[in-house]
Length: 262
View 1 (cartoon, rainbow, N blue to C red):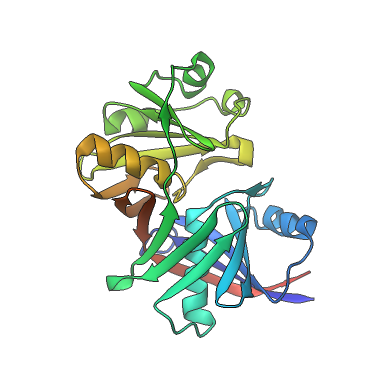
View 2 (spheres, helix red, strand yellow):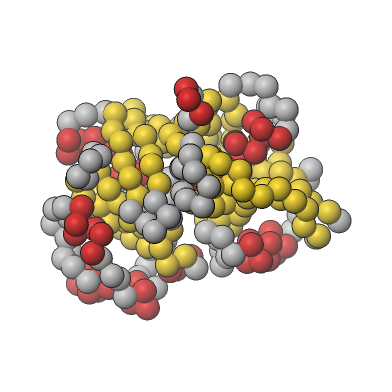
């Protein structure tokens, strides 16, 4: 069986930057074990699979090691593929995730695609010694969301200089760890570490911004923000806080279109 596969660089307007995601638009669902093997073979942070269901698409995301509850950059990449390769004439596409509910991607101005995601519920917690040891620098504020820890630091330089111990991070009971601080030229910057999912450092993490946007919106007293993820590839994210929902916008660039054998 031949299956079309696309690879898209998300949250960027330049090839070889942002976060690459693979996308398979399926006619019908295939076995979970096969989807996991495809994701492992692709060896990208995420491979997205989507199946049309009436007016919406059911979407699921796999890292090389496991299925995850939510992924922003692969959802943006999937919308980009649908808009550009599947004659989707609407200005938006509705997704439904069995793990995260209704998700929407709208066409914005100047090539932007706007993710409409549920806001994460983050809570302040006491510092965790094992977490601080794994990251290598004590934060000024520690929070916990649905799946990730969020550590807040004073400066962008703090974030740039972090050199985590991934062996220790892999022992933590969480999907991953977000680190963030005010930005020098943007509202805030971040990095995301998730060795538990087979991704030591994710290039650009849309889902992490469901935690970051409510925090920085309240901290900075503004609902519209610009963010940058400080990975080697880098990524630009345009953000809006709408209480129970957040909007996460970015651009995307196609890299590869081909067929895989299932």
